[in-house]
Amino acid sequence: MRNLNYLLLILLSLFAFSCNTNTEKETPEHHEQTISSADIQLDHGKKWLANAETTAGIKTMENICSHYNGEVAQLENTYLALYSEFNLIFERCTMTGEAHEQLHTFLIPVKNQLGILKDCKSECDKEVKYLEDYLATYYTYFE
Image 1 (tube, one colour):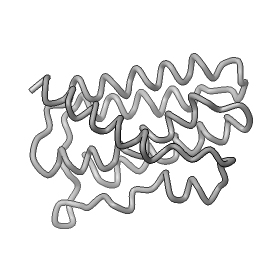
Image 2 (cartoon, helix red, strand yellow; image 1 turned 120 degrees about the horizontal axis):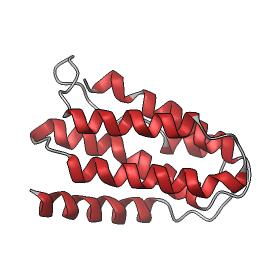
Image 3 (cartoon, helix red, strand yellow; image 1 turned 135 degrees about the vertical axis):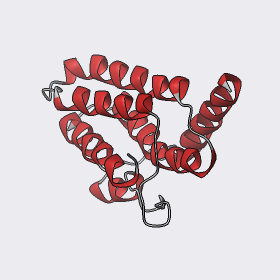
Image 4 (cartoon, helix red, strand yellow; image 1 turned 45 degrees about the vertical axis):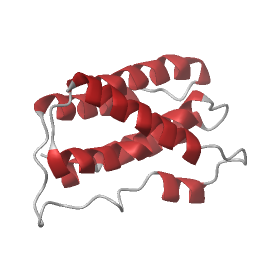
């Protein structure tokens, strides 16, 4: 199972890299496309059951975002903490089936936004806020 999670992480990373090669200046319209849960489906109108570790990881990432004070100097530590927690979600994931697939659909925009944060030079507080707001949508689809 762990090998499968690593394989999925690699595939997700490759997909995210191929989707995030735009060298133009990021715009709010970009975020409407990148940070979107539009492709996530509910389980016949109900939330998907997520493992506790995944939900805890999302809460931790939200907490990290909420403590970012807007200083570019703090961004590297914030990014590293977010990226580390993102990887832990994959390591600890025990979800299977369609719930697992829907979780990966949810996580693709998170990976894309982490790439934006890694290279952020200005308005980083807005970028972190985009991520924080998106992470809050997790509870719309998962319990």
